Picture (cartoon, rainbow, N blue to C red):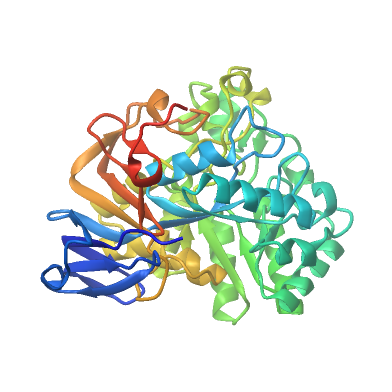
Length: 447
């Protein structure tokens, strides 16, 4: 589908893939792909080109999230492909990979095709399904991996459930070598976690809550690194949270084992002290850890051990959170706060701006061999424009997700998403209140 060719004029273009950081114009052709990046290109265009003045703003590749829960099919009361897409573009994300824990589980090509078709109908963002590793997420037999990949899946994962069967995990990694896709894993030994509901520490003891030790994550990471070395498969450790796990991934990478990992903004921002008021919005899986673990995750981002930041966007309605801490659902929404929380790392001096952009664009794309996350000519015209002089105050009711479960209520985050462009079309634009969403952001859609 052709779009009106567009020029973004006068912005600071930041593209980690090419290493470019400077004032430049950027052209998106009628095919919806990047046409050219250069100085004074506006003078070479005619009236058919749409001109968007982005002077004083940052122009980045559209953000990429390889860990999102969209809930559809089956849990549409929490989120749908469309509401999740709205949340994504409001947060600057143009590519999101969605996990398989739907109902029915995305363990067949038919379910994968349904998700792909729903995403095309919405047309707001690039939705890449992740197929289940095991049938029904039961951890007993492999799912229809080949069929799901044929229908558009980009990875396999039982995220939300640990793969306790080492033989099944081995077979999944062997399949990953055949098809060239990562196996994304939720690393938790369920025998060690033993129905715990927060990190095991002095804080959990003081609160009288059952704890999950770091070892529950560490022993599974150690096992799967051994299996990745044995099979040559691509192991991707989802939402890493412990210092021990970061250390083991770093050591495995140094030995040439194909292992990558991601970290969420909540795991590099919060410690388990956030749980002291029994706020169920701080209940996660894996749980929020202690200060040294947070520091280890930040160090992993700095030295490249952790290839990307992922949101683990996990929407839940109020009835799933307004219960006792032990009974509450795990997770938070994250697509609309990820950029601002990452910018806090920049403000604190932990990483520079180019690294922050890389961790949310080129990093995940290169890790999973995706074509997005770059502003190179010929690649999809997916961009986000940032206003560096603005801030974002987190108001749960103003979030575009169908659910509003966030521990960051009232936080003021640095910078703000000003515009999101997907395939050459503006799909989100800030309007001074909450933003507008839709093709070319021409209309304000009700939730």
